[in-house]
Amino acid sequence: MSAHAPALPSTAPIRDRVTRAHVEAARQRIAADVRATPLWRLPGAALGLDLREVWLKLEHLQVAGSFKARGMFNRLRAQALPAAGVLIASGGNAGIAAAAAARAVGAPCEVFVPEISSAAKRAALAALGAKVQVVGAAYPQALEAARERQAATGALWLHAYDQPEVVAGAGTVAAEIEAEAGVPDRLLVSVGGGGLVGGIAAWWAGRVPIDALEPEGCPTLHAARAAGVPVDVAVGGLAADALGARRLGDIAWSVNHHIANSHLLTDASIREAQQWLWREMRLAVEPAAALPLAALRSGAVRPSPQERVALVLCGANLDPATLA
Image 1: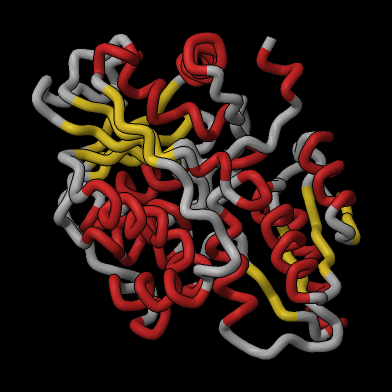
Image 2: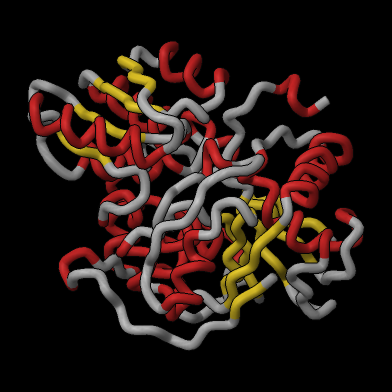
């Protein structure tokens, strides 16, 4: 299922919008903290696709196992940190990135996660020295509890996907792609709360058609485009621990007009693509990272054969045994 929505007015405050200039500033600020991840350029036939070329941005090889490290380092490096350290609510990946960034700068880190967060992600948080609080069935409950805790401690608040520094940091993925290979003909990216797609859309600002991809069980962007404004959605399914935001972020919504299409994918197609990436390419990624390939393999997105299509493989915080 896809939604082809016209440009819609922004509901985000002007001060919270993110531009290409913000992304470039973030790229310079975090250059020593994060990895410039590989861009694997392959003929489409190597992935069984009738395409001129497929670019795999291997962001699952990023520090802390996902693109989230870019935004978290940018947030921490942008201001002085309080003695109480940092605090975040996260389904897992943003928390892991926050814990890694906090450890790198010598700051305490407390992470609130929902019960749907995976054991692998909780273990990674503990290994990074974060104080882990498991609260509520899903992300919104963990978020509410974290907000209360932050108000009491004065820790620096980190949002998993809806802070300007976080979104600008995520956008450095697109800046790296362009610096290495130029501008693709199309880009496919997974969406949860919208931090990654928001940063990418801010960087390219309409120069590249962006196909935003969500599981049927976590349709924040799709629902927002249908309603004309971000709305609450039910959260569930295979990739909910990474993409399980209840509502699209305001910053992502402010660049919605730069997102060409929104598509919903079945859990079955996501799982098939995840297993294919492991079986055929030996790429161990979590379900959230498999949506771009799932969109192509399932036919949800049908580029022309002459296109060079970029796919962002956004994370790898999983138990490898689940790939069997």
